[in-house]
Image 1 (cartoon, rainbow, N blue to C red):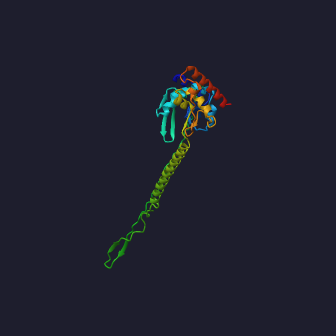
Image 2 (cartoon, one colour):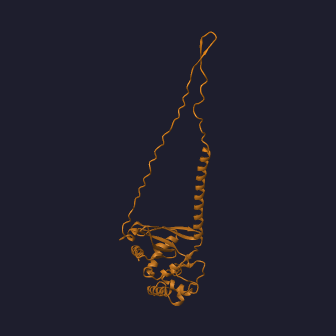
Length: 292
């Protein structure tokens, strides 16, 4: 299966709403949000029931799994990013806990998934703010009236005496109380908001690390067959030799000690095309038995 055929299979499968396997790493599935469709990658676990149910489905045939293993899974396991123009970009994040995959959906795939859907309408809400009119300022003016008294002296003259001005004048100003306390209160509110944001970020970071720590390192029998026999088709022989300890050929914990049969003792030439074809048929039968 070529890269173009692989991309076409992934696109058609997701458009039908079905999941599709990325061997040894996880699977792609259709997601809908606000009336729009996209694709998302989900990580695999050894006991993942979804991964086991997908094995042997038409979209996840042995030919597709082998092509996905070679084009996507193997480069990611070697810490190399994979770019499929019609599907998206897969970026590996390698740590001591294994390989995690960061998937970014491609625009062509998003267009295919949304073909035939009605356009999304956007409703714009206009909010009218009330106009605040400033209150008139009332100015109080205090007028001081001065009167003149006539005081007749001994010499009969007239002496003008200015009396003391009447008490009055501007009213005392009221001090701006609690102005400093208001500034301190605003600063305290801002500080509390920053602390709360830091706590939320730290919580989600710890939760994500805890979830990642639960994902053990896994492998699959296709990789093991490629490593020991030089061809992924012979995975069925490894499965039969280890049937009692393996739940799924696609998710095998690396902590398991597998038994690898010596095919030459069974008269099998691993490079013979007829033997390879026989092994592929054998694998298809095993997958159908698992999915019953």
